[in-house]
Image (tube, rainbow, N blue to C red):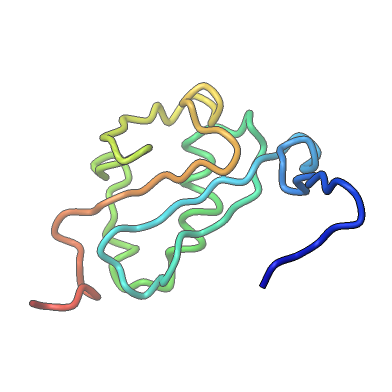
Length: 118
């Protein structure tokens, strides 16, 4: 359906990083784990260490999965921008190149208990 405006419409994004008080949105998904239907969305400080993100909110979010206790976080295969990514757990999200609304994916070979068997 066509829309007619009485004056020029200028859209103002409400989800830009300036609206998050020094924090940013980061999406994280666990590949091949169907218990989680979509990526986790976390609002995190840009200066949070990658290791703090993993040890804090990420571990808490994946805890319901039966494989979560067996994850060796330093052997996880990480992806960012659909490319292999080797994060430095001792550096911040920003220093690891993770910006506002970026998605990070991780894969845990051998831990796929909820993957549909083909």
